[in-house]
Image 1 (tube, rainbow, N blue to C red):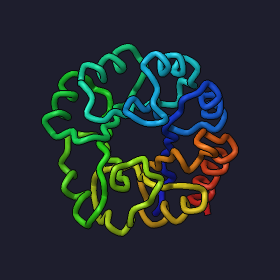
Image 2: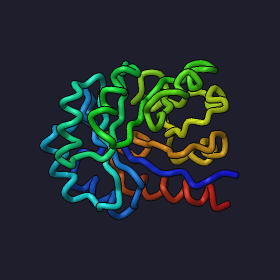
Image 3: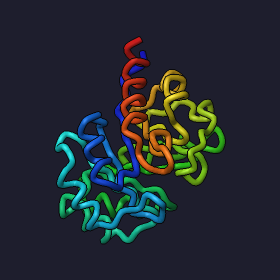
Image 4: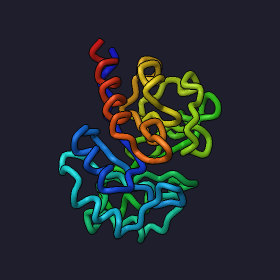
Amino acid sequence: MIKLPKIKICGLTRPCDIAMANRERPDYIGFVFAASRRRVSPCQARELRKELDKKILPVGVFVDAEISQILSLVNDGTIDIIQLHGTEDEAYIARLKKETNVPIIKAISVMERGDVQKWETTAADYLLLDHKGGGTGHTFDWQLIGDTRKPYFLAGGLQISNIAAAIASTNPFAVDVSSGVETNGVKDPEKARTFIGKVKRTVAS
């Protein structure tokens, strides 16, 4: 049975992006603190968080960041969830777990069968399955996921045209979209509305 997945829109950078999220009500939004054209500073993220509906959880996206940087953003209430998108290992995750009790998402590249299963025992609360490198706007072969007990966010090239097939093929805990709801490199409210509606209709049908 396919369940309605949670929805995360990543890479919000502007007040109008927050207004869009408040209207369309994804479950999560993402602030990127790593090198990216969508990168925001801690100060920017704090100001954007102030305007975010309290029912929407903000995720901080990091790549091999200093743990103190992450904890600072957790402790001041800027983010509610940590997403690790670099080469962070189990020792790193264990250190974070010792210092904070917020959920942790570990992003992995899915390049061959068995990649997901290697991370089934991770201390991270969720996996995020992505195309190699992440943030490329490209999908990966969903058949490579295989069976896993670990709840995961499906990412990598998701967009309006393929989200129904993605959900039907993988039945993920959540779907994660960024460039798929952008036009000319910025979030497009109409695309976000259509994407979210498509997710809900796919499961309802």
